[in-house]
Image (cartoon, rainbow, N blue to C red):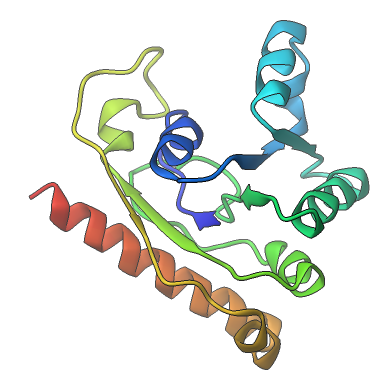
Amino acid sequence: MLSNHQSHLDPPLIGVASNRRLNYLARETLFRFAPFAWFIRSVGSIPIDREGSGLSGLKETLKRLRQGGAVVIFPEGTRSRDGEVAPLKPGFSALARRANVPLVPVGIEGAFAAWPRRRKFPLPAPIAIVFGPPLEPSVVASYTDRELVAEVERRIRVCHEAARELLR
């Protein structure tokens, strides 16, 4: 699953909205505080080094995908500064090709209003999540990396707008 990223609420909310157990790519720095590291590992998070090669995280991600697991990736690379979908980083494209699994776009809206980057704690707010139709591996293979990133971004934006419409 490839989703926009509005707040700290996104991973657990996508997990609750999904009908399967999920794994999550999470930046390695989140694993530095032992109690929190234990917690996020227990819910299936995989540490990824965003600054280095991230090879061990990528290997673990491929392993889980090949075992039939689902992995949530936030290809914007960080939480939104304004609630809108930011341009995607291309790093997921190589993983998508190697994993040979469907890519499911996800759009989340309302999480930014509930817990924007500048707030310490969340506020009550309505939140909507929309799962788009999967992009099958054969279709993924037909795109160049640049085309794949553009298509996934387009699909995430469509899901995000649909989620926004649910809240109107």
